[in-house]
Image (tube, rainbow, N blue to C red; front, side, top):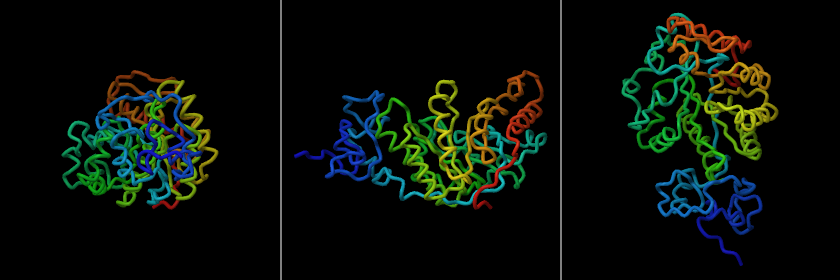
Length: 363
């Protein structure tokens, strides 16, 4: 008779699928929910002999503290208890430039754009793991960026792994979500937790749930929130699409900022986005962060049509170097930063002819 070793609701140690409560063919005595089709054959952590699990950034069933991590994500890897139903601003501009978190007044004086995004690392310090002082002085995000109150301000909650991991740890300790709510961002794209191909399957499952947990927490604080979708297998896409259909968020986001190489675009991003285009409810807005190449924007437009929103920091980055984005690619013009920024913003917006997107249940 087989005996289950470890927590009854945690991924099995040593990736023993038969004894894992989340495996589709788990032994009846330990089965909880059929979420996973089995081990990741590309995992680089199989047979790990580490003794100091608490110093390891990877969460797997063999961790000595896996029970603490399961408690941290609510004791389950399912999504059934999570909802993100906050009403979103409507209409949304189809293109939203991302800026560096300093004053936007000089840029906005030229372009007069209706929305600006700010990345998480411009608000939450990767060094101190606290909000920067300028975001703690009782002003709204619009006041800090020095744009009109009518301008939509967006917190793009993405960042490198150490940053979003630190945010996860500090969010309750320092009441971060309530403090961000006080900034009155018009929209927050919830942080996403990474899913790398060489990680154990347990890490994938935990991180997909964490991405939705943190979105649900932002929404519960009354912040208009968009959950982020990430995946590794088709089964992941199916689970998340089912969750979207059941809980009806007004929009979903996908972070493609790190997808620079064509191989990753062709083998991961594009197949997944194509599947989502066919299987998400047709009135769900899709926000893609990090698209900057014309061909990829046009591909995304073909997939999602007039429900597509693109957020990109390229206009601001190019402008800092006296360059603009054009139909022929980057062009060095040595223009004033506000003029170069405005030209690139208008060009990228021209690639999205629908101009604005109406959100379901918007305000």
